[in-house]
Length: 179
Image (cartoon, rainbow, N blue to C red; front, side):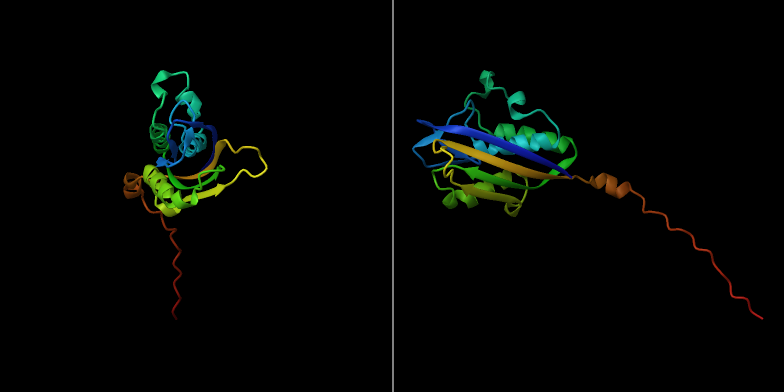
């Protein structure tokens, strides 16, 4: 097994759509970033990359590269998932916490969980999602995501078919002497 942790934060800005977990939410502001600013997908991407000791999202998709300007964060997640699979792992589950003052995530949580599960190739009950407000933190103009991912080693069907069963130890037979 491998465990990865991801974190991301972006500031709210007017005039851009709000994307969280690959879903566009109705809100008067979106999250600023070089790409689409999807804090949840960015944190998941970093958690996946960290679990397999790969470079982080900023190293793979640098903000200085114009190719990633306004890019869909699904691209980043898919690359991270490819690296996870190439390393011989699959996603077992993720747990995510979103911290933001608005909008309320509750009405959108099920759709976000389903979308993230679909992107990761897992069932929705393998995606935990919680939302908290930033009470007392003076972070009302930002969104933050924390994510933990658990990976499991993938067993190859080919390996399973060619693997020989363990040998049984031969027992000594004792004969009862007859008179």
